[in-house]
Length: 73
Image (cartoon, rainbow, N blue to C red; front, side, top):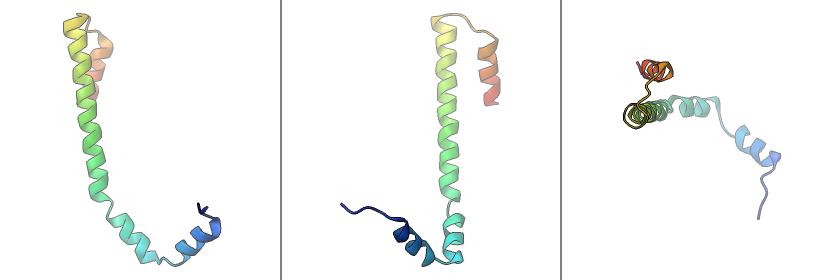
């Protein structure tokens, strides 16, 4: 099993040019958008489940629940 050394990483990075890094940064837009949409959907699911439990199971919908709903808007 080979260990990765600093010299190996330094050699790899020294062979890359500035345009390689710029190209890697420019192509991150779709990934960032996908992660943002994922977290938006997860937050809606979490707050929806919280509201369901508070309204129908415990029947106690308090100010912190209203603030969770307000935070989604």
